[in-house]
Image 1 (cartoon, one colour):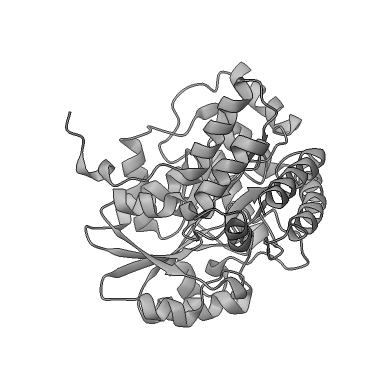
Image 2: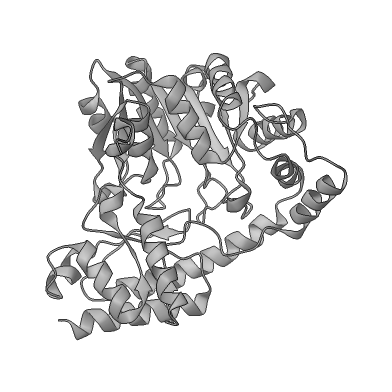
Amino acid sequence: MQLANRVKTLTPSSTLAITAKAKQLKQEGHNVIGLGAGEPDFNTPDYILEAAAKAMNDGMTKYTPAGGTLELKKAIAAKLERDNQLTYDLDEIIVTTGAKHALYTLFQVLLNEGDEVIVPAPYWVSYPEQIKLAQGTPVIVKAIEENEFKLTPDLLESAITSKTKAVILNSPSNPTGMMYSKDELKALGEVCLNHNLFIVSDEIYEKLIYTSEKHVSIASISQELKESTIVINGVSKSHSMTGWRIGYAAGPKMIIKAMTNLASHSTSNPTSIAQYAALAAYEANDDAVEEMKEAFAQRLDVFYTLLNDIPGITCQKPKGAFYIFPNVKEAVAANGFSNVDDWVEAILEEEKVALVPGSGFGFPDNVRVSYALALEDIEEAAKRIKRFVLNHQ
């Protein structure tokens, strides 16, 4: 059977692969601790569940407009103005079946064959694959670990060619948890404006920040940057609604219209019930979000300290999201392994701890670990990793 060429170059998601293997071991009866989760371990807040149940009971189970209900788009517009100081008309917003679908649809309408998109590494695993599916070319620019894995204006400038169409920014970042300051975003934005580039600003983790620093959307810095930026966000991480699949994009009217037209021929519309659940999330206060954030902050403090106590493992302390991205190169070498991927597999087999190798994020000397799990599991996982490292020295 001959498959389409567009799917032949796709690389399977390393996060999903390690999660699947961990689940298999669990089903076999092993006590596996999975550190690969890309979702909060909290259930969706009760008030959101109640809103979904009410919507079902009220018969809100039919098709909606392809770009989302009017009520939800109004709530998203209000959220953007309240939280990000951004004003959008409703035809500058599209509701999508998750932020991932917003990104996928955006690249489909934005890129022509050969267009280049600058992707700072470490990157979320789906960015390069989605760009390739749109017949674009991902240009990977490796950031410096000592600079908190962040893109600099000089690095950005050096990667721009006549084919460059856009650059992706993700703050706070998956997998590093690092975030850009307003001054850093302004400097990057000036480079983008000088070269007439689109900016894809993935802000899905904006509510999960554990320092006094505030999230800044690059679109809020100036009107010129707003006109060049497509903001991507959703309720998956902020309200523990990963399975509900509601995201959105906000940006120039022409782009949003094209995305809406494409969605009308692909998904018809985001799930109606999930849209009413998301409406409740955006209209309510953030008490449930704050409780989740406080728990993550405590887990981060504990896990960061424990990981840095393991010989050959070093990591910078993240400022947001719920990941740590430690460098394990020295531990891997001391344990007699040739690469991180084999080391990760051995830890899963021997200690039943699932880590995600950094190769999937463009940094093969690192691993991504999630602290979206109970504190006792975090402490036990660190204990097992340290035991493995010491036993194999």
